Length: 327
Image (cartoon, rainbow, N blue to C red; front, side, top):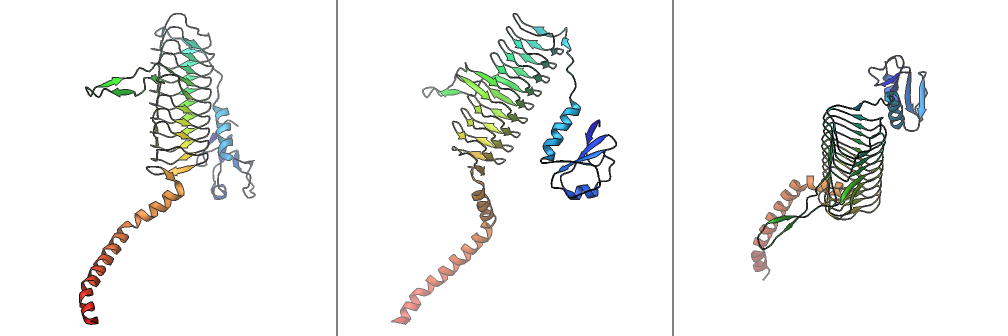
């Protein structure tokens, strides 16, 4: 076996992934074997039965793609500040700027144009893609992946209005950012430093592109935040929270473990463990579905109300005459 491919193109020496029985029946490729659900009906094709084919595919594919780390060393155009601790087994690409007192773990990769501020620590096997910026005093764990254009540790959006003058006075942000092991941060995502204390992203959490994590947020383990999610200041997420694209959470709100927030939902109050919410402001998903159905029926309801109002007016117009006849 030398790789993984889709059903349309898999050939000799490759594995293919099958999710449904009808896909297996229709498959005409020459794959060496198929990764299939354990419940799939019998077939004369060579199969590997697993409980979770998607998970198995991800693990196997990663194994095929894994290559031994080859240290590229320090490129001559890279700048390294004073009192840094940089192992031999690292790759520091052209144009990288490393501040003073920076510590890099083993097998760290810093791609071209990356900027690392003073007093930053980066754990083993972490990869920072091109043009990532890490502000001073931040901590990045092991095996993290930070994609191009991400900014870690910029000042949070904190201002106080001087009511006498109307001027917006900047609030100093003297905290830091801590990103734990196995975190992945998408391209052009921003994680702001804390006003005081720590903005934290805990182990295994994954952020898509263009996500905003504000000052003093605390994101639990193994959370998933899709593109353009926005968290206001001091938001706390439990473990395994999932947020769809463009979802938002207001400041100082807490989401319990395994909460799910649908795309474009706006969370304005705390959510209990396992909550599933949609809409703006966010409500329980089943309630939102009922409201959506009712919303679609509003034009008919409006027409019916107008008809009824007209009929009531007609009946009211008849009341004096009916009353007069009854005398």
